[in-house]
Every structure is written in C-alpha cells, then in structure tokens.
Length: 92
Picture 1 (cartoon, rainbow, N blue to C red):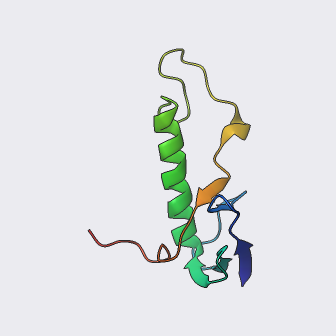
Picture 2 (tube, one colour):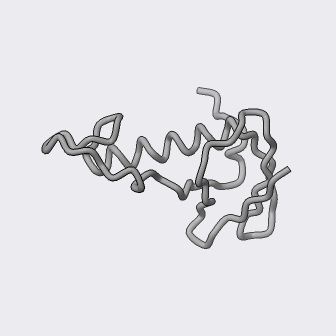
C-alpha cells in the first residue's frame, strides 16, 4: 500500500497514473486518513485536468483553441485536490 500526504493547499501530488487495483492511503492535513483505489485517484486526476483545460481555454487534447498550438507536455496537472469522503464516487 502506498501513502500520499495532502499538502496545505488540499492537494496530493500525482506524477503518474496508478494501476486500477492498487490501494493508496491518503493522509489529510487534519491527521485523518482515507483509502483510495488507483482507479478513483485516476478519475480525480482526469477531472482536475479537464478543469484546468477548461479554465485555460484548451481542447480535450491540450491545444489552444484560438492559436492551434499544443500546450507543453510538462503542463499536465500533477496536483490533484482531495478531501475526506472523495474515495467513493458520488452517486448522482
């Protein structure tokens, strides 16, 4: 099992996509802990990437819609916001 520490901004650092079945223990700044699956953290990372691209007027592949230029590959979201209760996907 892996451990990830939440930073003071409420994020965890995800440099890579995790295997779906791996278990990751997230330690929050308040000292509480919650277990996430790799699949759930990957979903949260995808949501953070989508929000970043929307806020910066980029398309789904990371291109600037106005200029047609690709965004540098190192501009992928590494810091994913998490909070207690996010380990389970919300049922809508």
